[in-house]
Image 1 (cartoon, rainbow, N blue to C red):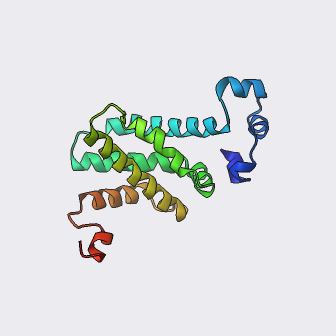
Image 2: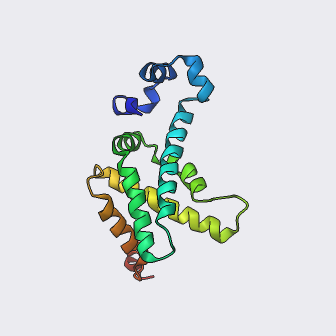
Image 3: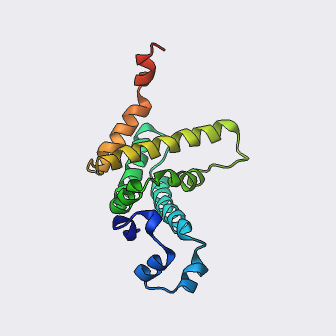
Length: 165
């Protein structure tokens, strides 16, 4: 991930990753299929951290939802430099798959659950992108408060209000 802070992702080669990590190509290919799989593994690791912490804070109440969201943003802020580099390279959308799986997305699940997870994940990824646009300077607690406020708001989204819907 540190290479993405110094050069565009498209310019990074597997040999560059091996050199940075101090491993040979054979060792790299025993663990990964490609440089893309390194990115996917990074996202899975973040989601494992988030899932572990989030499960401890959820009892189904709004206050636990706030704790959960704070845990999400706290974990994400721990990867600030990497997330900013990924965002600069236009790859936050690749977080979607690992995040969906982490939240229990399953092609066999009922439609309502699948749509609920997709809605939740899309919101977090867009929120994360906007946070990254500003350099992720806001505190995780502020981001969690804002997320809970938006989700709990009885008001219609601003776009719907502007169009008179």
